Length: 330
Image (tube, rainbow, N blue to C red; front, side):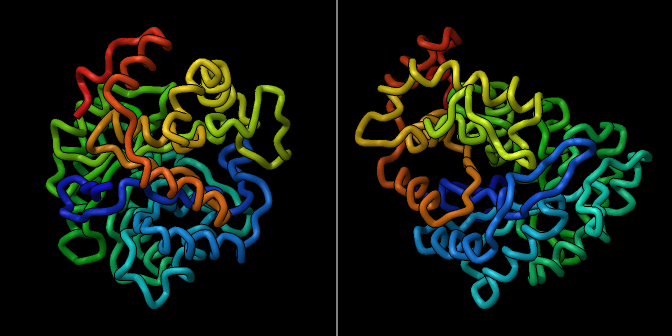
């Protein structure tokens, strides 16, 4: 498959990125477990190696993931080969590494006031001189703070600390406001075959932004490896009631109806779910979580199989009872 552009940044990456949330290990966000259970750092490093070997050169992490541990691992893995990778990370939360806890600033203006410091801390953990895509992680920052934050981010671009920036948000209004920044290059948002985002995709195409897709496999629910009866470890974020209702349950309920289409051409279910995203939009870059070489191998195998067809997009829309997305695919 051809590479895809990180919006206005000019950077080009493989159409598939590696999400690095899961490799950060256990931590808490507000009052919920926000990690993906116990991790093996050696296995995580092997997964990053496998991704690079498979042609995956886009890595998405965050200061929040494992309260910095994900960034630290990625920095170790890329030491001596930084030029082979495009690094995206995130900022905007209050991080307590000792307590392994992530919270929101009570005074939301602290997001702006601490952005430069957060950038320096991420640069240190990532062992790099520049971050390719620096994304606001708090999706509900008040819009009144956007202009002040954009000024800080443009300053970081001018200083050579970051190349571009974006926002991890599902709000189209917020995305449009952030896109007024000259070096805004991407919006990260939920997208998968069951959870479409037509307005956000249209906005990204209109404003020359990359659509970086979290939950492309619905936190594993679209892989066929889990069912509504599955029980996750106590420190797994998939126990969160919001995740169960908004992401996992809709995927479980629709998967059987979509199975034959997603597994067409010899694809696995996961590969078919990624193929839907590539067919859905030319600016979309899914970032499924990968913490083992085996997961990398399966997801990377979707690249050779390519996107679904327009006819398959339309068949899926009909099965799910939603408007024809093929008519608006970009």
